Image (cartoon, rainbow, N blue to C red):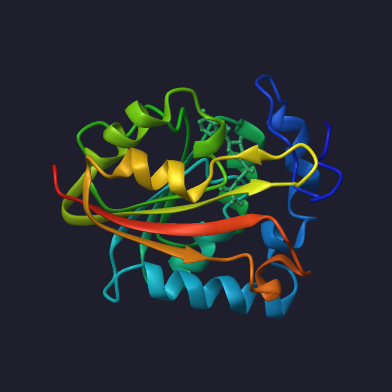
Length: 210
Ligand SMILES: C[S@@+](CC[C@H](N)C(=O)[O-])C[C@H]1O[C@@H](n2cnc3c(N)ncnc32)[C@H](O)[C@@H]1O
């Protein structure tokens, strides 16, 4: 798989073999959260983005379940969905014994039936999905009244950048969300295990059309 050489962030062209990526996915500091300082940095951010009370969290494109685990450690019940069976296997192992279920499926049309959630959490997935406007509408419809979208995205690399700028994402959310909060993540090297110069951010949005 290619990497965006100036960022270390894997590019995600259509057709990328996520099953093949799964075995080494957690080697990146912000993926595996193996470094206690990196892990603490994400745990603190997630603590601020998620509800204070135990809630139902849908982690779409959950990968190996690193953010799912942080959410479960805060007492939240997690449903994770990923297209890659290998990623789902690793997530299941990582959260064994926790209040968590993992499903193989498409983040754009998650196989959750009529179930609704307090939080839809998505990190580093939306930017690579076709028709993000339609996808965001669908995700808003998966929320209970008062629920929130927690979207962690960015534009990786400076030579050949890939991703979705915060300005574009907030523009797509504007018709859906009454309250949209953007948090810059580029300036916190603890999150990435190193200094970064590209655009990295989180958006917490509370849709008004639920
Ligand atoms: C960059 S990784 C992010 C993983 C995880 N969200 C994290 O932040 O650690 C992208 C993940 O999205 C998954 N993915 C890509 N396209 C998907 C889709 N259409 N539906 C569900 N998962 C998808 C991949 O299998 C991979 O696990």
